[in-house]
Image (cartoon, rainbow, N blue to C red; front, side, top):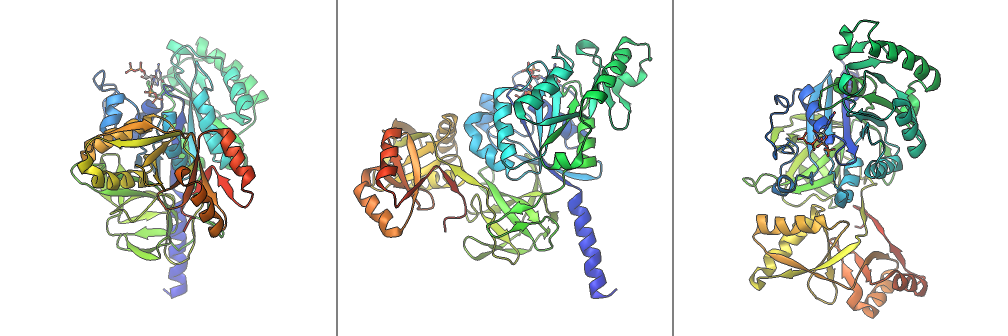
Length: 520
Ligand code: G4P
């Protein structure tokens, strides 16, 4: 075979491998059924063999995606985990997002690494507060949304009403992909609007069964009143296909997975400072969107989660770490199934792999086979809660410093080192992050800390000419701090003061968002 011919064969192979990647997250309001649906999806994908609801009470939330002590203790999902599995000829990467809003920054970063989000809605409650907020984050990037209306085995709102509510509160067209057969205790399966198949127990019902009679009446109305699925509109994030089901009763779960197999979406192009990088480009590029240390107490390792943005990654490959200009060797890229890991001999655009490292890789970093490019879109948000760290045992000051840097690099909190030399200040979006920091410092580093209040409620990154920043820093020393990257941050005690500073310093800009990876 000529060189040109073999190159084109491998290009086709590359494109078809990439086309079968499905990388998604599940978003929902707490209690809508995300954990249950995740479990059922993983089971359908053969990733876990768990016999129904056998978990003991109190252990209910100890699903495979929860691996940290604090999550188990509190029954909340704090860390983002990644789970890779195969289903229907596709390779799925399911990224778990923390349910609690105190971890919204982590959630935001995770959503930069997905191609699609499954929005779970409780059929009795409809769109809830957190669903709306998460949806808005998806909309910022026009991420396609698939809707799963869960708990149809219970008393639910009227289906047309639910579809209407989604359409009007989220300004999103809805196209039912399935229709429920029977309701509440009589929920018996789903009707596929596309193939006209009946799935589940309902397939055995006679046409005279009241549920089948109701189905044909509702279908007539649904088909007349609701838009058909339109691939383009879905890909653009304007239309959501809607599935009805019950995660608990395992009805409608494979409808959802089959649809993801059938119409994707496939790995999308990723924006960089200079251009959009397409998934099927041959050169490998990857974006680090999450760092996780000490995942396994037996291995004190640090794992960077990388979304492969283009090409085919192979083990042993060396990529350029664009921020430092150094080479990064991929000795042990890994696929994850929460606690279980597996060496990834090869991975394709769309896949998420873990890259063990010793602190070289940071959130927002780009790895690239050749081109000097930097992916954008992974921001830091200005924290709303600022606390000074109080160390109980002065002998541990050095250990604390190192631990704070490591945990800040992971994105657990943001770290600010006051320029006047006083003890460090940590910034968070939600107070639960402080609990996580405290518990991890104790559990993983053996350092006990407390928090003290500060006069500050606002943090802003300051940019402008160097000399101007230096002069400003000198004049406001006690309210200036350096962030993890050494970038200057101004801390204000009120909106009034912040406004005054902005007015008095027209040569400087004060930012409440910092794009990671762009500062040096
Ligand atoms: P979350 O991750 O979104 O917070 O929700 P999770 O899956 O933990 O589910 C929240 C509650 O809703 C759980 O009940 C769960 O069993 C129930 N649930 C989830 N899916 C369905 C469904 O399709 N139908 C019905 N009827 N219930 C569902 P719980 O009372 O908190 O716990 P447990 O008693 O089931 O252990």
